[in-house]
Length: 529
Image (cartoon, rainbow, N blue to C red; front, top):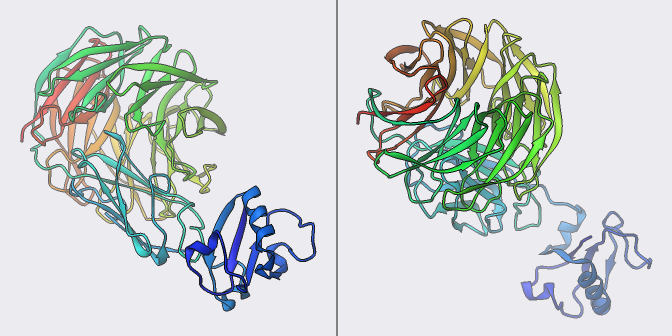
């Protein structure tokens, strides 16, 4: 329960504690007053500061929430207009941002200072970013990260509803957006580098700096022996098994993000056999332990993460193949998740992608429905509630999704790996979240997974596709207006089921890793600078 004090004339901040006699104040109280001299804000009553000792006692009891100097004219309206976000830098969905960039948000009025709880920044390779906030009492708030972004790292920026203007008004709704750091070099020509074995039914991969040493490591979901294996980079691209986390029944997919906001990367694992999602917490050195499981996820297959409700922490979504649903898991800020919603009627939900499809400042979802041969777009209401907005049909055996701005127009497009049709379908966004299938790239036998990154460092996003049946990885080059061609095929990936990317050897070129279900191993593929 909170109270707010407003002064009839501008005063020094010290008066928020001890106002001078004779200055008139307005008080907003969240409870029914016991005296007719003090009423709710809607009553607009003014009290003399001869009663300030009693007023301060009330404020001390219930907590001072706001104390801003207003003129008498300001009191004609109880609530000032909320600040409006006018621009962000880097821009929304930018795919080639300098790794040393700061992040700026500009508003239409002067803002108070930002903090790590109101202006929140996550990197998908490193976790919650620390840095210096500047720009308080100006229209532009700036975050300067302590360390540079890693190569092609996806950065999620959350401007929460706690951001406040100097007139006391709060941002009326959060704003969440993403951009990618640039790839500095690379040709898109890959050669075999390292093989990590033995594993047991390698199904899922995730990449990130688990031990905070500045290079990118790997984690593997092993379906057959229900484990997650942590692979540490040396950091020249040679990986060794560092840790194993068991009791992950039918582990099928992984995603890495900083669930508890402590600055290191944690993991979530979709356990297809156990119908759960396991939450694995990083000790900060690459050693992981189970932080519990979210049960009731029937046939969990796919995962996506993002701040669905704009509160500054990262939530989860789960594609449940067995339940033909997408479950929304809300994070309480400490990495404990609550299943709050399920979107039903998604036939064979297999994989997810997230992004702001309609440009309204919140993160939406798309789900690949393998049995339904479709992709369904789920629109976020801004508070983490999702509804089916549209369906893109003729996606035969839709198995995997990737999001990116293929055509450079500023909005997010989609690509779909269609297992049955042996193709990747390219879906173009019109900017409102309506997608059109504009092209299909064929000859991809058993396309089971795909990721989008700039393999050739030309500033646009390309694709890589794991072909389970053909035991290969295909690299698709963007032209860069969203027209993809098959550039190279890398064989010897027996039962290729999942992909991850990172600069394994420190040469600033994006490399690949392939989880091979049949061969029970992970192969790394080095990109030629």
